[in-house]
Amino acid sequence: MPRVVVDVMLKPEILDPQGQAVANALPRLGVNDVASVRIGRRIEIDFTGEPDLDRAREIADKLLANPVIEDFTVRLVEADEPADARS
Amino acid sequence: MTARVGVVTFPGSLDDGDAARAVRIAGAEPVRLWHGDPQLHGVDAVVLPGGFSYGDYLRCGAIARFAPVMEKIIDAAAGGLPVLGICNGFQILCEAHLLPGALTRNQHLHFRNRDQILRIEATGTAWTNTFQSGQEVLIPVKNGEGCYVADTATLDALEAEGRVVARYVGGNPNGSQRDIAAITNPAGNVVGIMPHPEHAVEALTGPSLDGLGFFTSVLKHLVGTPA
Image 1 (tube, rainbow over the protein chains, first blue to last red):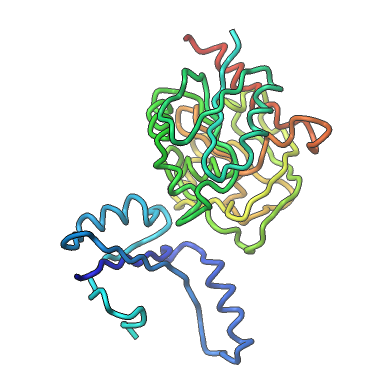
Image 2 (cartoon, each protein chain N blue to C red):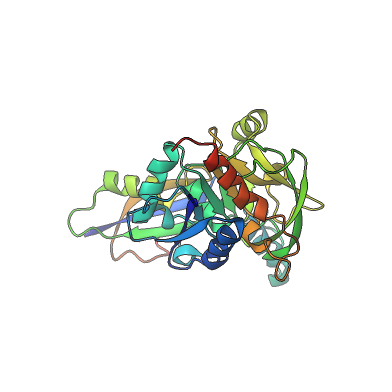
């Protein structure tokens, strides 16, 4: 059964101090070619029946994301897709 | 008749005891409200206290906003019920869209816990009518996610409509835009404040007694409001 994945990211104009802290730590790993890092959240939703993208969008809009500061995307993936499938 | 001021306890609330005590010291009767009980028990005003409701899971206040008691509070606030959200309570009021904007991680990522000077700028609200405009008060601040953000249009509207209730003076502890520490809704009955007035009501434990003014204000407001 496909799974619904919701990705939540801070809006581009909102400062992400967590991402900045990570970016500032990278030179300590010897990484000096990263311009910026922004941190978001991935939420996986398994419906009991057929996945319902409209319902997932409603969940994302009302609870998973705060539209004042965050944007979100909703998509379907195969449930056995590993977390790094997009790499 | 003594005013009855509700104080909500969510799972993870921390300052509900202090808030109830501040209500009592101000001369009102504190009424403990439970997050899962969709009843306001006839209270005349409500305080949403500080803490970490639902463990701050997802976002601070995001889950508390859907608690059964909150549905009643959101309805009653629209009808003029005075509501004060302190710290986590402020976060809940923003998540509930009773106040605009949002509270995000402190810009420097550090938890800040210190006594903070605030300048009171709006004295027409239900919770600040005993202060003088421009009065400086000393109140503890303690937060990790107290950075107030909103889009420029919202910030400009808050300023133009006199809805910035208090600003940080002598150093911004969390990076809040325009040094905003507290705001109100257009009607002035809902106020959100990041620092903790309930911790500044007794000489033994507080840096001042300045916080008491928020609680005596709501009593004054209620006396002037026809039942």
